[in-house]
Length: 154
Image 1 (cartoon, rainbow, N blue to C red):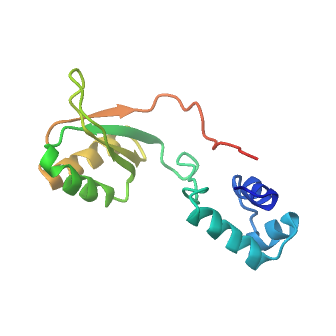
Image 2 (tube, rainbow, N blue to C red):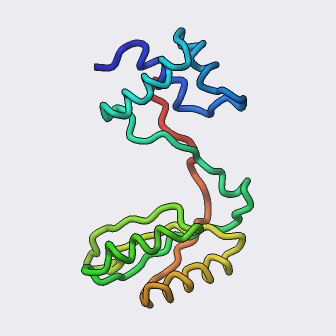
């Protein structure tokens, strides 16, 4: 069950945090509770599974990353977990996930890499490939960004 207070707090945290020393204190004031109550409520929402994650979203372009590519990899099934953990450890990788290969699409592991240029993305993928002894992959570059916002629930 989601209370009216839960809805208020979800509505406040689903957007940008205020750029101040204690953002939860000012959001708590808007919600009509103190800072500790606000934080406990957020923690409770997470524990109950209402919130799956609470984190920062980085604007890659504003941060100096001018290129990004989805790298699709062909990794032997028995090595997917190990290679996935290895690839996830690269600081240039923001996403890493497994999908089942299809008849016309043999790739089963995917990473999103970010760099200052397309050439740098190619170099990052090559470094990753060398580290895992994987030589079958393809880079799919983003051409246009259509959405950079999260869902708004309340």
